[in-house]
Image (cartoon, rainbow, N blue to C red):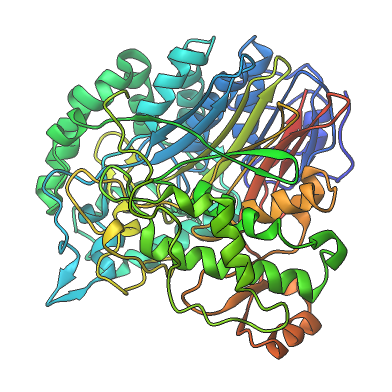
Amino acid sequence: MRAGSHGALRSAGGPGLAALAAGRLALGWGRRIAFAWVVVAGMAMAGDRRGAVATVHPIATHAGLEALLEGGNAVDAAVASALMLGVVDGHNSGLGGGCFFLVRMADGRTEALDGREMAPASATRDMFLKGGKADARLSQDGPLAVGVPGEMAVLSAVSAKYGRLPMARLIERCAKVAERGFKVGDSYRGRTAGTLKEIGWASASDPAFAEFRRIWQMPTGQAWVLKQPELAGFYRRLAEGGAEEFYRGHFPAEVEHQMRRTGGLVRASDFAAYEMRSRQPLVTTYRGYEIIGFPPPSSGGVHVGEILNILERFDLRAMGEDSVDFVHVVTEAMKLAFADRAHWLGDPDFARVPRGLISREYARELAARIDPLHAGLVSGAGRPLDADSDVFERERHRHTTHFSTADGEGNWVACTATVNTSFGSKVVVPGTGLVLNNQMDDFVAQPGVPNFFGLVGADANAVEARKRPLSSMSPTLMLKDGRPVLSVGAAGGPTIISQTLLAIVRIADFGHGPADALAGRRFHHQWRPDVVKLERAWGKSMAESLRERGHVVEWVESLGATQAVGRRADGRFEAAADPRVQGLGATR
Ligand code: DON
């Protein structure tokens, strides 16, 4: 048994490293772990060559490792982790939400599976307006906030197409954890308390939130073991009935019942009409690396690519990653890209998203607008070449948490999944324990009106029936000489783009490994509001220097949660969970 050197695990409800090292890790399904993993809380050391998993929760990481141990591949590990996250980290992601799943198999097949929620058929552009004004409560809490979930469609599709293990077996393990319960950690507890407070405006008997209140009632002052028997039962139904049960079985009727009782729009017919999309991954290059990103309706792939294209025109290494020059230039590039996001980006099935946003010519033009010493005025979106003709294709009918997996055969996964904000809409389908997302808030409720994350947008991202809301989720793979070397992505709304970008830059420009890249201090600018968010660890002098250049600085304690798996030249994996959260990266 080897273990990394970052000390004892103090994970959110997770096991201790000591327990793990002694091979007595109880994973909820009562098995002893008697094999060697290299694990470290928050980060992970470079380990072995057989596989790697990084997620925000130790139990979910172990579910992925267990799948690898049983002969599963990186896809099985990702499916196992995703399903487990829905049990132990349900405030972030779960089957009531959506995901973007980016996979590259050892034989070179690469696919972007889009499990983004879809607006119900009766959704309308003005559905979140009250008296002519956007009402955030409608799009953030309660039944109108819910889009048709896509995660189950993706997990069952990838499991069938690329996986080796029966998905039913992976689901059953999660059901056991849901049934027996898991120890809730501080972060989960805090999110629950915040959510209960947030829905405090609704009466205790409001049927929209009654289930949430019942299941997530918090014990005062003692250890909290959360048991989710209804969720266990629901998972078992899915082990039996699969995606068919989820989209066309009894479940959609139960959702419809809850929606009709509470004034929501989602119907069983919306579930039957849900379409997972297989999309062409978006490929750009940066300093000799191939960057494989997720295409729209993710804005992540486009803008990580766009910003990297701009940054390639600057010598970041010479500036130094702790320098104000570096933070300034990257901030300016972020501003330009986010201004484009607000104008151009939306579901490519509905909006014309120009491919020119990731062209080198356009990057050259944008880079030339960056004043190395002064914050520039970015009044709006740019105009990429071929903005009218060369757009991301409408798909023909071919068809927020990030986790990364890889296996020794060369299969890699980057997946970001979310129910949007904590516990999504807070609407639980009675009898299932399943929290439904509030992804409808990622649409633009009204031009110029910011959403939960302060993002503004335009027509391209207006609400429409059966449309997918724009996302910032940015699951990304990075290749060197045709071989994957990194799987990375993040949680945290629009900061996902900045986090993913910074991880790539710290690896490509500054030569860090994944764990160090994730530990690096972060900053974020999203054009509107016109402020650069700076992690406090940067210290006052950086803030002062940025202010001198004309930036408005806002402090944040900690920015986001990135997970990554990397592979070194010697073939060893390194799995890294963000040190800001209590996740786990592990290799075998
Ligand atoms: O898709 C998006 O961009 C957002 N719904 C992601 C939400 C998120 O990252 C929440 N995490 N803090």
